[in-house]
Length: 360
Image 1 (cartoon, rainbow, N blue to C red):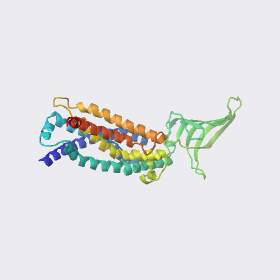
Image 2 (image 1 turned 135 degrees about the horizontal axis):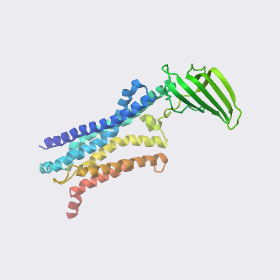
Image 3 (image 1 turned 30 degrees about the vertical axis):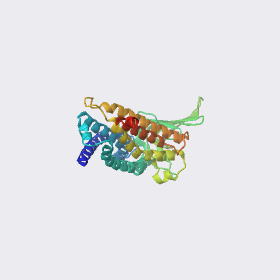
Image 4 (image 1 turned 135 degrees about the vertical axis):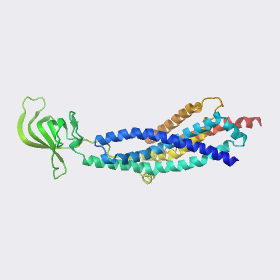
C-alpha cells in the first residue's frame, strides 16, 4: 500500500513538473526567438543559423528553468493534496515526511543529474558555439549592415558615414563621410559608394564615385577641395559584440584548474544548479502545507518569495567571490547550507518534533 501511495505522489508531481516546464520554456523561447531574429536582421547572426542558435539557447534555458519548475510543481501538487484532504488520508495510511520525501527523491535526483550535465557541459559548449557563429557572421558582413538614413561609425577609423538610400545592386546612394585625424577633418560627399576589393593587408575599402573631398584643420576657413570620379578609403565594420565570453564559455576542466576568482565563482555557480534543485525540493514540501479550506495558491506567494531570496543570495555570493570579498572556500556553499537548514527546521516545526522532544 505504501509503495502505491508513494508512486501516486510521484506521478502527480512529475506530471505537474512536465507541464510547468513546458509552459515556462515556451514563454522564454518565444521571447528569445524575437531577440535572435533581431540579431539576424542586424547581421549579428547568419540567417540560416537562427534555429540552430535558438536550439542552443533553449538548452541553456532548460538548465535554469528546471530547478524553479520542479519547485513550483511540488508546491502545486502537494498544495492540491492538502486542499483536497488527500494528504490527511495519506498520513493516516502511514505516509509521513520521510516517505513523502522518499517518493520525491527519485525524481529530484534524476533531474539534478540532468541539470548538472546541462550546466557543467552543455551550457558552456552552447555558449562557445553561439560565439563562434556570431564571430563567423562578423567576419563575413560588409556594407549590408549599414542602414540608410542613419549615421554609422566605421569601426576605429574615426569615420562616420551617412547614406541617403541603398540602390538595388547594394551600393549606397548620396553618401556623406566625415573622418577626423587629430585636428585634421576630411569630408567626402559622393553620389554613390560601394565595398571594393580588400587590399593585400586584408583591409576593406569603401569606394566612392562622382564626388568631392574637403580636407583642412578644424576651425580653419581654408580647406583643400578635390573633385573625383572615383575615390577609396579603408574602413572597418562596426564591432557587433564582445570578443570573449570570459568564464561563461570555459570548459569544466579549465575552470577546475584555474586560480582566477571569476573562474572559481563560475565553477561554483555551475555546481550550484543541481544543489539548488535539491534544496528547493526540500523547502517546497513544508511550504506547500495548507489547511483544507485555504486557497489553492496560498503557499505559492511564500514559495516565490523564498525562491527570489535564495537566488538573489546566490548572485550576491557570486559577486563577493569574484571581488575577493569572501573566502572562495566558503563561496556560494553557505547559501545552500542556510537553505537546507531552513527546510529541515520547517519540516521539524510542522510535525512537532521540537515540541515532542521538550515534552519527553
